[in-house]
Length: 90
Image 1: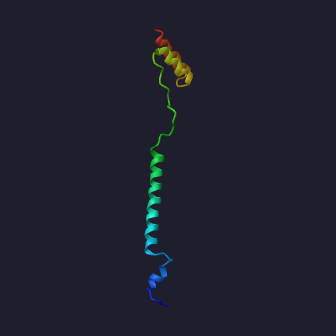
Image 2 (image 1 turned 90 degrees about the horizontal axis):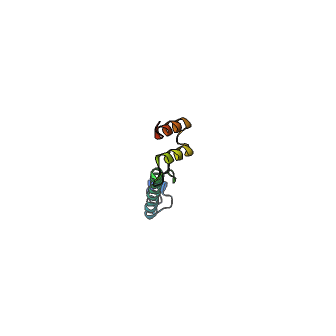
């Protein structure tokens, strides 16, 4: 059953011209590019907008910094007492 075209052309022609095939290929490349760009953006963006530790205020003394670290839970009570003793000269 050959109606003017080759059997291969009739078998795999889904009603699309070459322009449609090229357009579909370009859309596919665009979608793959967008997917890759999204993955790169997700991997390279910062995970948190908040800093992990707040910087000490300007003019803070060592004792005030130690108190702030203890209050934020960065150090436990034993570490706080040990460092406080060192700062107090004992």
